[in-house]
Amino acid sequence: METLAMHISNGIINGPVAAVFAALALAAMTICVLRGRRDLDDRLAPMAGLVAAFIFAVQMLNFPIFTAGVSGHLLGGALAAMLVGPWVGALCVAVVLVVQALVFGDGGVAMLGLNITNMALIGTAAAYLLIALLLRVLPRTPGGLAVTGFVSAVLSVLVASQGFVLQYWLGGTTDLGGNLAGLAGTMAGAHLLIGIGEGLITATTVVTVAKVRPDLVYALRGLRPVAAPAVPAVGGAR
Image (tube, rainbow, N blue to C red; front, side, top):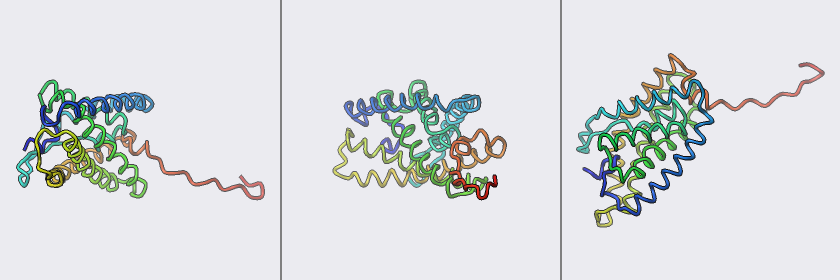
């Protein structure tokens, strides 16, 4: 059951691999800070704090996955990406993970680089790429936002879970006997169900915010449709 946890505990991945991912996560977070500063304005700055607080609060609520014998909770990558964008969103999730590890012991402190890579970086990036694609083909209505939030959340959780599989392949401390495919399938199956729960939370939250304050949804104001090419004036008409 421990190997099914997205919050990786100390000792599951060896030290050298954990150190490499810690350096990778630190470099990526630095880029997110630099890029995120360009997005921050009087709307996004307070929204980022609210998103981080909301993700932290909802992550404390676990829902059981009976078929896998584990419980799941919101990861928050898709929700953060839709509300505050990929750069600030990754920072929000990372801050939550740091607080959980240091204060509540949820995930090993030595494994923070691994957890941030999976949930804050891979999960948020995968979600935002799909959000950018879906919002170019779906209507920007409550229904379109709900579908976008749900699908991107499910995908982000699945991709993040496979990040753990890659890390375990590189430095897992327990020999699986060559059954890496079995681990990947188990992780995918359990996190598909977790992703469905996350998708429902994400879709409901984003649609609720969009109905009240659509200007606070980054995905709506940050992903603008491509402008139509200008038609040259004929016969001096303007």
